Image (cartoon, rainbow, N blue to C red; front, side):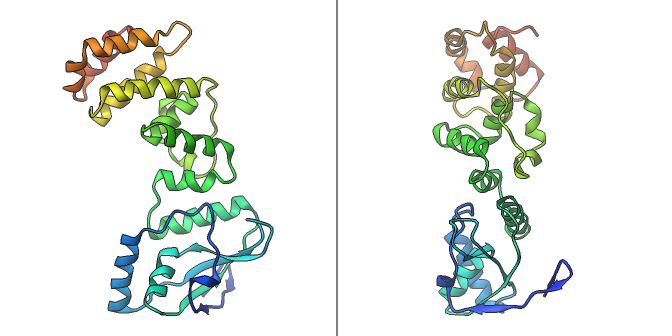
Length: 246
């Protein structure tokens, strides 16, 4: 096998004990392993595990799986040797970037997978990860609050590539306040929740009164729970809930 112009030799491990676990990799999904076991029994192993030997994680040189942890687990379950190649890693950033790219090309990562990976070396990602654990709010919404800009909803590449930075100094308080709103509006349509968030971002300033906002939601709660996406909904939220101009 060749990579970046040089040939990489395929080696074989007896089982997963030869590899250490990367703290930034996602957990093994047993359901996905089960599917891979069925595939192995049908057509054998068609994939080579990608590893690296590095001391970047804890100061000791160890062999880590960058891509293929589910396949290696399935192979171990079946008592089959694990084929792998080793690639070079130059830095922690290089490690996360290659891990994200390789994993996304095989079993697509969702946004939380990227955040879990980058949080090991990016403090802002760790903060975003903690917010997600504290508040049952969609991660994209938390990221929007973190930068006080709804545009990030359509440009999540910033998060995936490790470039996300929290620039909103009021983000902590805003997450707490919006969580109150989120709990009130319950199972409203996702698009309606984003309309609430957009209006909240505009309303949250030095004159914002959270108690009055919560009272307004209580007053119109029956209407809120029946809302569907549309211009009239956005106008209602802005005017009746957040007291913003149309």
